[in-house]
Amino acid sequence: MPKKKDKAATAGKSLLQQLAGMPEKLFSKAFEVQYGALCYRKPDDRDIEILLVTSRGTGRWIIPKGWPMNKKKPHEAALIEAFEEAGVVGRVRKKPVGRYTYLKWLDTGRVAPCVVDVFQIEVTRTAQKYKETGQRKVAWFSRDEAARLVREVELKSLIVTFRAGE
Image 1 (cartoon, rainbow, N blue to C red):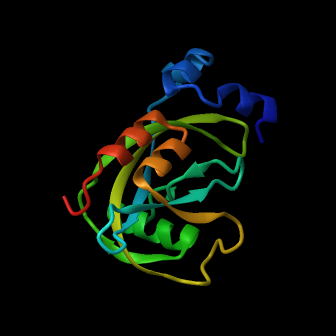
Image 2: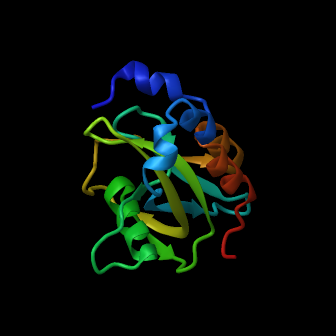
Image 3: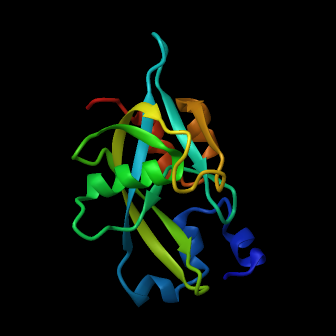
């Protein structure tokens, strides 16, 4: 597990700034791929709301995401992650709405640069019990508030420019 001071040193920095402090990561291997879920709902006649969860390690606000799954298409894996991390049930689009990059601290202490393909999910309901119940905070935010809360600059931009159903 990485030391807290190592994680703290990268907080608030762009991926490129973080990688500049670890040049060996630029040439070690390709980015790892993950699949993320941009979960939204449209209450009444207001703008959409975005669902965020906290990471288990640092408690920062993120979207549900995870690694590829055997025999699952990328959009299916994103929907499964959304259910496991936040109890989300809904309609997922097969085409990603965008992607963002970040550094993932692995349990081995290694840092893996990751690219996350993001799939939109229109939430129809949320379950009370799911795999990670109680392990994360789960909350709905306005588009602007969600963009302010996430750390990754590319994810902020994706949230602000996201158009539901497109």
